[in-house]
Image (cartoon, rainbow, N blue to C red; front, side, top):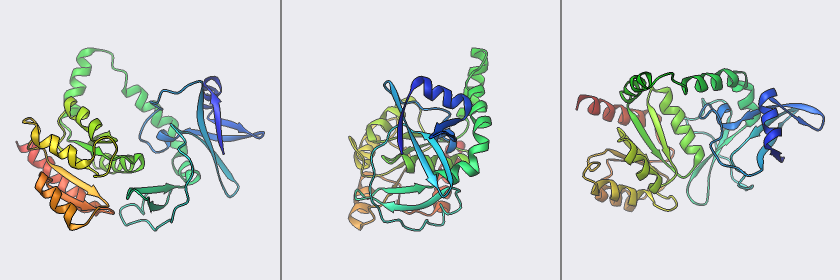
Length: 270
C-alpha cells in the first residue's frame, strides 16, 4: 500500500518511529537508514512524500522512499553466493534491459536492522558536524587516505549493494547513475578505480570509458566493467576502448575485491 504524507505527518512519524495505519502503530523507517546507506532522503519533494506499507504474515512495516516507480511481474531467481548471506534479500531478477534487480523483504530487513537505525542515524548526524575548519581539514586528510571507488550503475539497488560490500571492506564509495554523473564525480576527486555498467541512460559505460581515456588526467585510471552483456563482441569492444577488466553479472565477489585490492595497493605505492 502506498500513502502520501504531508511534511508535518512525515516529521511526526520520524519523531515517534511509528506510523498509524488503520488504528495500529506500524514501525516506520527511512529506507536508506534501514539499508545503512544514507541517514535521510536527499530528494526534493513537493507537498507530499511517498510512504509504502509492507506486510509479511502478521507483521507490517512502513518505509519512506524517494519514489514509487510502479509494479512489475518478474521471475524470481535464487541469490548467488555473494549475496545469499545478506539479511533481508529474498531473491533477484533480470529485467528486460538486462539490469539485475535485487528483491528485498522489507519486514525481514526491519526485524534484523530496525533496532540499529536510531543509533546509526544519530552517529552519522554527529559525524557530519565539525566544530572548526581545522578539524575539518584534518578529517578530510584522514578520509582521503582511504581508497575511493566510483560505482556507476543505473540500478539504485546494484549501487547500494555494491556500496555496502565495499564499505564493509574499508573503502570509501561514491555513486553515479550514469556516465554523465560519473564524469561530474571524476571532476571532484580522482578515485582509485571505477566500476561501471554498460547500459545506462544519457551516457553508457562505453562512452564513459572513451571520455576517461581521452582525458589526460584520467587516461590511466583503472576501469572494471561489470555487466550482464557477456558476449565476446562486447568484451572485445571493451578491450579496444581500454577497459582493464570485464566481469559478467553475477560476478565473483572475491574476484572483484581482489582486483580492487590490487589497484588500491598500486595507488598507495605510487
